[in-house]
View 1 (tube, rainbow, N blue to C red):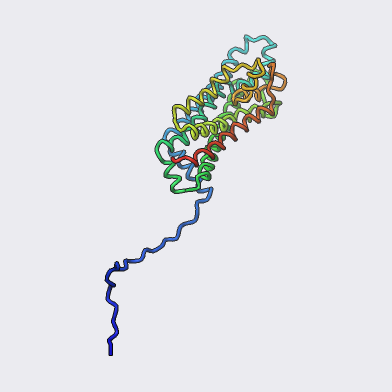
View 2 (tube, one colour; view 1 turned 135 degrees about the vertical axis):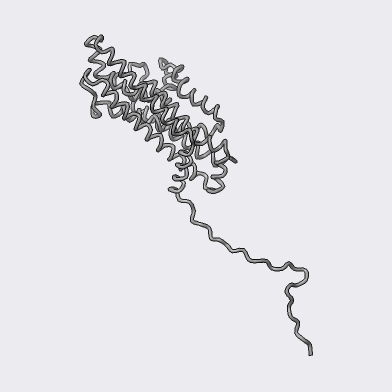
Length: 293
């Protein structure tokens, strides 16, 4: 009678069974609010950002306040006709001057470029995409955070400049109220320059991926082109009206006060704001997720 064979501890030719690895269930996917919080933490953790925002606020508000201060000092020497004109139009113009508007575009454009270039140059963006493979959602969250910070900056700076201008000019004229004709459009157009500039900078940084080149391109778009393109011809007017700074210049002027051969319209200028913002955002969403960061 045969004896049943018993299995040994291991069968020859086979590796002993090791300890089983325990499968840890994956956590829930990142929500968009989580991405927003992460992008906000990354942006504010940059040491240069708080100083950059503070310096930009002081410079822009100072430029506007200096215009009002100069007008107050020169007021007694002006003839009555000029005083009447300034009381109606010039005082509002000093609430947010052209140098201040150009400085805001440049500053916020640099902020938007820094938001993306700081991660590309350090490799943090690659780490972010490894943790969150949904690249377009990450870029959408970054866009929302940059836009929100720039919008808050623009609203604060324009509000402070407007009321400081009124305080400096108090006693020289009757004052400009927020409900006066053209005032609300002036304030909105000036404040919205900040998010437009920031998103344009974000788009340039996403496409170019080189800090110096992105900043030079931003400077050309904001400062050089508006300075050298003349709107006395139809072709020049088309190019000029399609740029953000000339669009702002049109929006702050009262209706019928343009005095140009080919004047822009308020609706067309708002469209320029929207188109520059949309193109910059679409570029960032389309280009960055397709590249190996």
